[in-house]
Every structure is written in structure tokens, then in C-alpha cells.
Image (cartoon, rainbow, N blue to C red; front, side, top):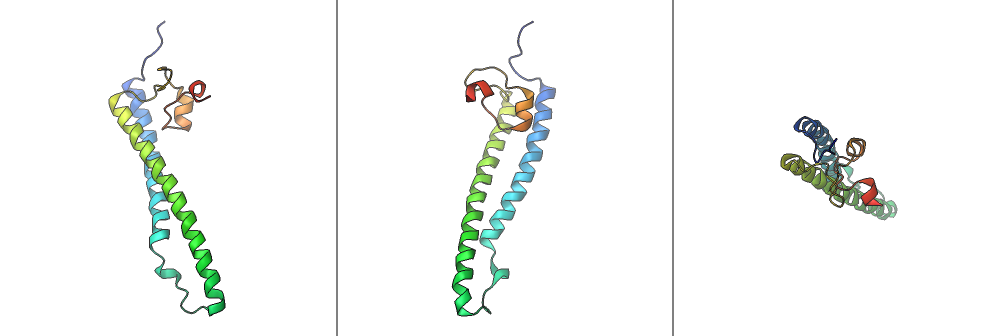
Length: 122
């Protein structure tokens, strides 16, 4: 029997559902992280003694830097998920970009934006 060269339309729709669910969750997390960075009006330190004000500002800066770093990672993940949707539309989803063979479904379910099989990744 000949090896499959691509996933069927039904399989691609299954993956589309998975990718869209992950994308929705990732976008919600990104929006939450972004709001931590942008909206700090609720965390005013106007009533804090000057001694502690500097410590709080330092902690706020570290917290914002971490939120920015996490937001960047989340934005990158969102970009990869959107690229996966394009590959689904093009019917090239799940094809390893190195070997040209199908990436196993189990790997795609765990990492739906994967473009490499485990063998190619090694």
C-alpha cells in the first residue's frame, strides 16, 4: 500500500478545530498579559511611604518585564498557530518540511503548529 502524502480533508478539519481552539486560548492569554503591561492604573502607589515606593516601583518594573516577555512568547505562538491554519487551507499541514513525510497525528495533536517530524527535529 502506498504511503499517504497528505492528510484527508476530514483530518485537516479535525486539526483546524484543534488549532482554532488553541488559538482562541492563546489570544485570551495574550490579551490578559498585554493588559497587565498597559493598564496599571488600579495599582497606584500614591499612598505608599517613600521608603517602600522605590521597592514597589522595582517590583512593578520586574513584573512588567516578565509580562512583556511572556506576551512576546504568546504572540510568537499565535503567529505559529495562524501559519498552521494557512497550511491547513493549502492542504500542506502535517507534512514535515525536511523529510516531506507526514508528521504523526499524535505529534500534531500535542504540538499543532509543528512543521518537523521528531526524526527531522533530531
